[in-house]
Image (cartoon, rainbow, N blue to C red; front, side, top):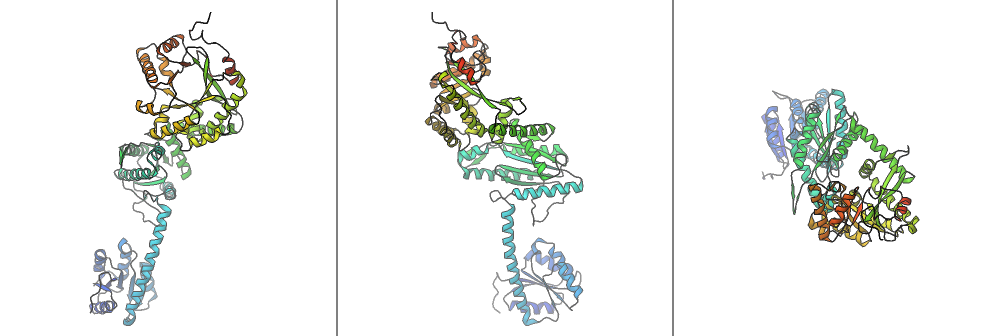
Amino acid sequence: MALIPDDSPLVLVCDDDSMQRMLIRQCLESEGMRTLEAKDGYEALELVANNAPDFIFMDVDMPGISGIETCRRLRARNEASDVPVLIVTGSDDQETIDLGFEAGATQYITKPLNWPLLGRLVKYMLRSADTVKELKSKEDHLRYIAYFDHLTDLPNRRSFTEQLRRNLVNCEKTNSQIGLIMIDIDHFKRINDSIGHERGDIVLKNIASRLHTCIAEVGPIATEFPGASRKYPADAFALELARPGGDEFSVIVRNPSDADHVISIAEHIIGSLSEPIQIPGHTLVITPSIGIAMAPEHGRVPEQLLARADAANYAAKAEGRQRARLYDATIADDSAMDLATEEGLRQSLEGTGLSLVYQPQVDLFTGAIVAAEALVRWQDRDGNMVSPDRFIPVAERTGVINDLGDWILNQVNTDAKRYAGRLPKKLTLAVNLSPLQFNQSNFVERLTSTLKQLEIQYKIELELTEGAIMQSGSESINKLKQLKNLGFKLAIDDFGTGYSSLNYLRSFPIDTLKIDRSFVTDIGSKPGNGLVNAIVAVAQALGLDLVAEGVETPEQVAYLRERGCYSIQGYLISKPVPIEELAKLCQQDFRTTIGLELDK
């Protein structure tokens, strides 16, 4: 007989009759199939574990354990769950046949065997099994596409939502609890914008891998989705990791001991993710902000639990980022207030309630008003004035800041046109920019589009914080140059409170530094004087204009003028006032106020 190739189908023949086994073996080998022989069910189970046959020929009536029981045990094993099993029975007994199918048999045949047809039957069953395997492979691929994130191989949003819903149902049934950990990577957009999306994807894959390793140190990871086997009992402690999307990851903690247990897991995650990440050409330090919600305490349905975990995440960011925050009643109050604030702002942008006030800046050597900073004010629909410290952060978190920024520029244009004849021709109007606005990829394009609709007759100075322009150095330089080309003056607001590098300051096309009010307040003390002197020296070395904010006393004015500060802004001159009041102030002489002698 010719040698049978090693890649030919391997058939396990299980029968307690040695003569029968020999005949079956000869029949199958004549059809080009390889064979293994087992004299009973126990030997068959052992051979399947070690050899992975493609087909199993099983006699029903055997000593020890029957063929039906052997079939049942085979189907419980992953390595034999899909292998075709042909059971051989001595009669057409319907009950035996039904039991065989219930145990997992693929087909049956009765004795005496039809030898000429046996090989052909096995071939057809193998061909059918191959077709089923191919279909199952395609089904598995489609399931993967539907339920897994292709970048990180973690369960995606759809899978995560179904996992969460399933766990909440189990939580209700068993009177247990689960913890939901929502992880956001702080300022990830900055990474994408600075090193590109391709490398950003490498960072995300690194984060996913690190998260998997990190939570595996805490407990078993149970990744479940429709069609997958449940690896851990529903009442066991386990964790489920997913990537719902973007730079957001989630961990479902099954059956934690309490909320402190979940918090400790979150803190372990923060420690792991905060370690530097090495990618080609870069060493990056990322930080996560984490929100935590517990079920059933904080919610019994996915939508509610997710909303509260997200609210806790926002709170973690508001409290400084790189921390974990458990949802509680104070966050509930803040969330409701934030929603009301957002709704009110959107309504006011389309109607009334928003207004601008202007705080003048005076030249310390002439006493003339040379600039004014536009500041937005908001009166809600109940007539209450809402502090900018309250509504600006909400506008930034919700994206309303972009429309608010457009409204401010339009209103500055309207005010300037209305009072053009009563304002100094060389007056500069300063407008604050949010870091979120500045760091958006389409910021310059959006601003250019807005400017085309305006007829501003005065010089506009855009004020940015140190943090805003330092978030992505080289990209910030390009944006600042584009803004200069559009005709804007540029100022760094609250200078000295951030982390500007002198090397970067030399590269930034900045016109003005504004000394933060906290330093001006400390004038007269040794540390305060030292800081102001240092900032003045930086401005002079770089040839920049200098404005001191928050000036309230003649002594502060004298010190600043003596050191070479050009302009001041503060309550000594005026509080922020409406445009009509600014027009009146521009007609006044402030030389006496700032300690200059009047012309005789």
